[in-house]
Image 1: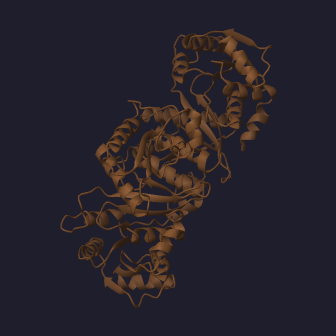
Image 2: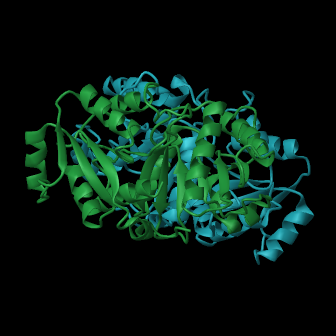
Image 3: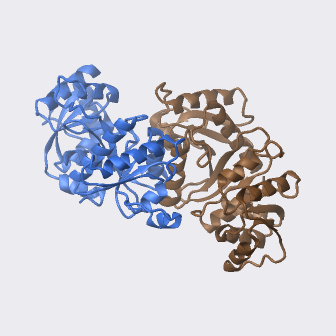
Length: 296
Length: 296
């Protein structure tokens, strides 16, 4: 079981997975790809403007002369070509470079290619927080804006599948709301109650799932006891499911900016993982994201 | 201008404001009241079960024999009596003890008493985060569940009035959303755009207000520059307005549990402040909340 983000790199080292960099003329992503290549986590294939890609690579001191570069300008063509190669099993991981996320995902979801399994795509962030004793998965902080109940169920399932792959056999899932009481005025609490009961009935496979839980009683046994609440998650959640992107986003950014958290993130739900690093991510975080995706 | 929570106590010391403790048979609140009395921040009046109140006071080693105790059992009567005394200007601050928050607020909002000014009541939390260089106000993390645009405008105004009273003459207000782009699919971003423009037109008085802003670019000039966005708040927000209680609650609890933040909180919008401390609050935080309310 992964307990530190650095272990992602150790486990992924020398896996040499084929990774497509879609929109490869991007210094930020090339830096991370360079790091990942140095550890032999991935074997990159670049798709993008060849000249610009070579310039960016030279800026970050990355010798890419031995790798395949598919020269391509249009965003839509870059995305289509990338997804086509994934479909043909010529690559295992799709890494977004300088290209609109929506364009990439549109092609990932295209039914002519087998990346689309019919599942909802969702983003999972794996957070390492210095003040906290364990890693925490959070979903969805980046992709689905205001998921309905069915979409939330998919988000739960995607995150559990990811945790399973990292060795969490029976992850503890907290369905986050601002209140542990089920209040009919608070949609997140109602949805959490339903999802928790679905989980009890085995819908999500082996897991311990409870909600609605406020953040404090999801991650602190002390807070749980203080409030006198009983929860199978027992203040020891592995996975936090947030009810809305606004809630997830402030939590994610609060952890990074105020609690010095490092993170690895990946989009799951497609047949193969998609990495969407953000310019604001630290260099470490970008590398961890690639390593994480290579383990899936 | 207040820059550390401890300054709240220093400024409030010896102000000797009359404070009503509604539902006074509560050891947690009595501990905070004892601390506040020792600094002569408040002069308490207790309303609640006399015997139980005396027992609780003795548990926390608080000699209350010289203070007024109004013997009263029923929650509704406790709340009514408390609000009546506030209405008659026999007290300046209302502190919730062991009594349902909804019951207290129902009486605060009762139009027969002049605490109800017709304004929305909202909660403001003032956060001191060790990893951050300044205090931050956050609203509303505790009271209004899913405020509509009109309620959000009141939440903004209430928080600015509070900041003004603490010496922030022209506070910088960030309207938080998960995205800085105005996306018509993301309600928080649309509302933020409207509120920001209202602010530009002077609706909220002297302040610098901008949104939608994601948390990172609201509180980090570096993140703002990295994303290439221009904002008058300039990554240096004094006040964060969250779009929904779920977003506020995870932010608040993340700061406390993962970033070791201390906090002071108060309900504003009524003619006189109401303090609603939670059992989960630290002893310091409860004292700070009382000190904060005594400065309003």
